[in-house]
Each structure stands twice: as C-alpha cells, then as structure tokens.
Length: 189
Length: 189
Image 1 (cartoon, chains in turn red, yellow):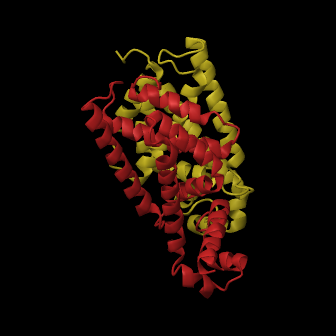
Image 2: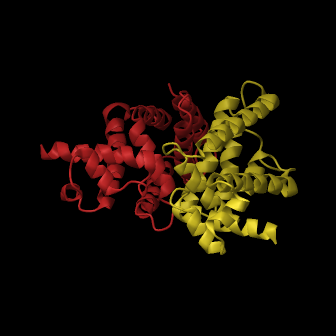
Image 3: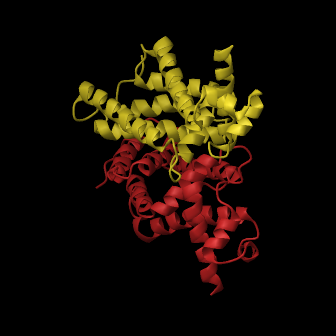
C-alpha cells in the first residue's frame, strides 16, 4: 500500500497547490486530507519541496510518454497540437504547472531554479534541433533561437489563456497552424 | 501630500505582491512599510482588492501611453517590440503582472475575472482589427483569431521567460521578427 499512499499524497498536493499555490498550502493540510500526521507525510516526502519537484517531474514524464506513444511520427506542429490537446485533458496537472510557473518568479521560490534551468535547456535543445535541420535560418527566415523562444512562449501563453477560459477548445488547431507558419515548413500532409 | 501617500502605498504594494504574491502579502505589512496603521491604508484603498485593481490598471495605462507617445507610427511588429523593450525597463511592474497573472488561476482569486475579461477583450479587439485589414485570412494564411491568440500568448510567454532570466535582452528583436512572420506582412521599412 506504500506506493498508493505516496500517490495519494501527490494527488492531494497537486490539487492543493493548483487551488492555493505552493506557498498557500501547508504540509499539515495535506497530511489532514490524506489521513496522516505531518510526520507521516514527511516519511514519503522529507521536505515540502520534494512534493514540488515530484509534480514538475511528473508533468515532464507525462508529456514525454504521450509524445513517444502516439505522435512521434508527426511533424513538430502536429506534435505540439497533440501536446496541447493532451494538456487540456489533464487539466489538474496543467493548472498546477501554470500556478507554479507564475509563483516561481516570487522572491526565493523553490521552483525558480527548476524553471530557469528547464527553460534554458528546452530552448537550447530545440534551437540545436532547428539548426541541425535548417542551418542558420528556418524556411520562415527566423533564426533557430528566435523560433525556439517563440515556440516555448506560445505553449505557455496559450496555456495561460486556456486556464482562464476553458472554452478555447480550438487551441490545438491554432498551435498547429501558427507553428506551421512560424517554421515555414510545408503544410502537414 | 495625500496623493503622494497614495502612490507610496501603491509602490510598496507592487513591490510586495511581486515578491510574495497578492495572497502572501498582508495589509498590515504594507501599512507598516509606509508608516500607517491598517486603517490608514484603508482610507486610501477601502479593500485590499482595490490595490490589485489599481496596479493592473496602472500597467494598462503605462503601456497605452508609451505606445501613443512614441510608436504609434510603427507597424504592429515594431509596436510590440517597443512594448517588450519598455516592459523590460519597468521590471517591477512587469514582474508583478506576471506574478498576478499566474496567481489569478488559483481558486477564487480576485484578479481572475479581470484577466479573463481583459484577455477576451484584447483578443476580440485585435482579431477585429486584423479582420478589418485583411479579411478572413492574414497574408501568412492564419485566421485573425488564431493570430490574435498567438500574439497575446507570445507576449505573455516571452515575458515569463524574461522574468526567469533577464539575460534575454534580444526579446524585442525576436518578437518583431516572429510577428513579421506570423502576420506575413512585408518587412519593416
């Protein structure tokens, strides 16, 4: 049952962080919700920050698995459309990510370093992949670095809009069309 | 001096919200910082939410004034590049906006309705302006609505990246180049 209890704690933490932010949630509240003492929770997660890290890693893994499972054969606009559609299904994980991302720029936030490194890494990796495929300029005329910055920004910014207004169900198509223009690649077959 | 005290309260609130979030900041702390009692602050701002509204309106006004003052003659990519450069100069206001935007999706947040309406309004206004100029499709092939969603997302997402890493000083050029591609308009003369 240990593994299930761990997952239960994570589920509750995710829900509470999304509703009240990381700082607005106490370990005691999480413990109470899962029927443990504070010490009981600390047995699974020695520090509150470990809950944060586990949730952020979870989102990375979920997206990676989703891509590998079904959409690796698609081009980048298609892959990103699939990621956005998937994010909308997993609204709890998407919401907590948005909340933590915003909160991370407050003073001394424990997720700040994670996001800073994560963004630098993803930008570099994406930029390198564009450069490998297209050299100094994408077919659209953008540099690999500008395209990588823009792609990341689009994903975050559209997520923010969706979190405020779930009626924006056409976001997967929008991201596919926008990325097709942004890369300047031929339309999806 | 009344007006100066009001501005002093706002400055402190802005700094504290940016550092600790709206919910992480108490009226008592703000009052202490400006040398007033809690009642003294409530004289200028009857509710804590009034501070929030005043700060959000301030950012809108600053951006509008900046655009009208110096960049109204430029095309949209140039205007947006100027907005981004200006945001980087006003880092306090930009930071508090980013923090409040993220926090606004938490449960029952007082800025949630503001952001929801603000985004819907800006998206509609921008989309209508694209439609008026280009009809059903922009030169890039995007629909006015897709372009409006993407433009807003780019501004927010790039701001988030910059807030995490101030070394990204090339963002104004990136937004100009990316928007030029996104609209499909001829390059800036």
